[in-house]
Every structure is written in C-alpha cells, then in structure tokens.
Length: 178
Image 1 (cartoon, rainbow, N blue to C red):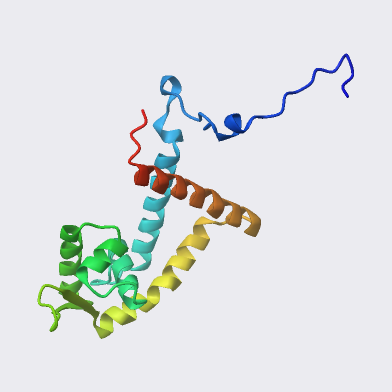
Image 2: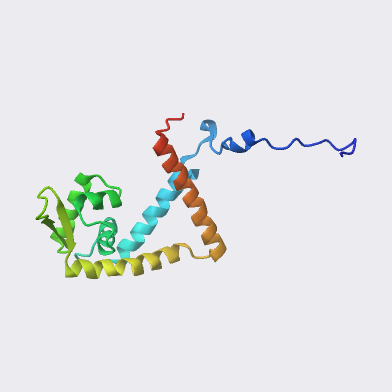
C-alpha cells in the first residue's frame, strides 16, 4: 500500500532494461574521451614498453611476439592457422613471417602430405625468445596497472570482456546501426 503523499514508482519494464544506454552524442562527441581512443592509447603504450624491454638487435618487435608465442604454445602450426589466431590476413602474416625468418626465429616447411600447406617451426632462437614473452608482458602489464586493487583489476577485465562480447555480437549480426 502506498501513502497518499508518496507517488508510486512504476516497476521497470523488461523493455526499458533491454534498451541500450546512450553514452555518446554527435553534438558533443570528443574523440579523446571515447573508449576506442583510450583503449588504442593503452595498447600503444603497452607496445612501446615491450619494445623498450626488447632492445637487443635482432630481437622480435612487439607485433612479432604474438605469433612467436602462439607457435610456442601450440595454438597454430600452419600459416593459415597462425593468421587466424593472430587476427591477421594471410598477406600480413606472410610479411611478418618473412621478418621472423630473416631474424632466424622460425622457418616455413611445406607439408609432405599436402604441398599446399605450409607449416611453421620455431628455431632454437625462436623458442628462447617465445619463452620470454610471458615474463616481459606480465611485467609491462603490471606496471600499467599500478595503483589498481585486485578487485578493480578483476572488475576492469569484466568490463573489457563485456565490450568485446558486444563487439563480437555486433560483428556476427553484421550490424550497421547508425
């Protein structure tokens, strides 16, 4: 029962709960306040920190670490698998592998069963470099998370996963909302 002086608040409808919130508006949009811009700046800063940790001549660059590590942990064995795992097109992957081969970190070996398939193998130097990846990335990421509590770190990862889930759902639908 409600008091005559207290207005009743209608229950939130399921429809209202499903409606997306509008966080950005064209009339006052500032790119430097967008989540995409901020995330891109973070990725760039992390990449630059990794580069400074790997200053030896011939060391892999930050973009080269991902495929080295994916090969090391067995996430891919062929050029096509590695391109998918690294979210690169095959042309970009081929150029990246050219540079890794030139540094003596991997080699491409044509499959004996299917000549169309090109397998990738890490060299001893490539395996040694790939083993360093988790150490360098852990150190760099921990430095970038300075001042966060464990609870905040877990919460941040949850938010980022939710954004990624939304992005993947939009891509799967082929959404072209304006």
